[in-house]
Length: 164
Image (tube, rainbow, N blue to C red; front, side, top):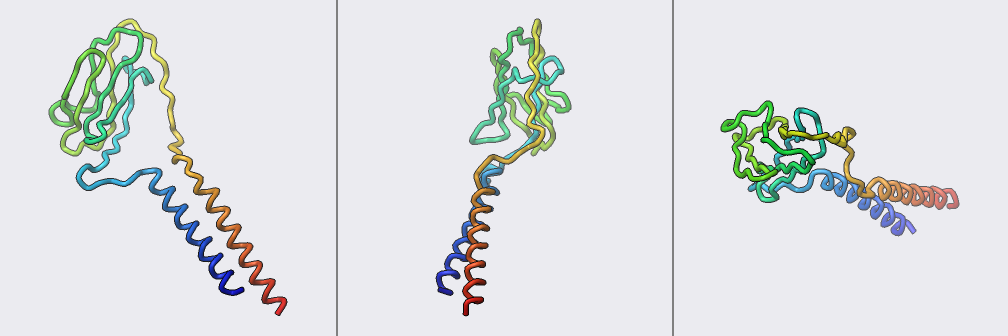
């Protein structure tokens, strides 16, 4: 009986550790040394007002390359990146139509603000994720189940000792 309880408690602890590791890696992912993940906060604006009329795409092979695409109804006149200096903080790699691709330079680690200068537009407000929640992985539920299982195993051991 002691071996069974020992195995159950070990299994519960193993599940708890694995659930913790899953939640840690789900939030950030694994970073390869060749291509470090650059996590610059990105803000999209239209005529200086935050907007969700701009689609942002990071290059999967080089996270320093970011593409911005204006998807609104107005006529795009150009792009600006307030707080950044062209040639020092970023360079333009591609620009055509409503798209522009920039590359961050010199390990730039500040906020990236992409402002689309647009004529004749109404901007839609950006939907903010201000709470910065981690993705739901079910780790909390699995941990609770593991802890409950460990509690049951401990109660079984306590009862067994009381009966002896």
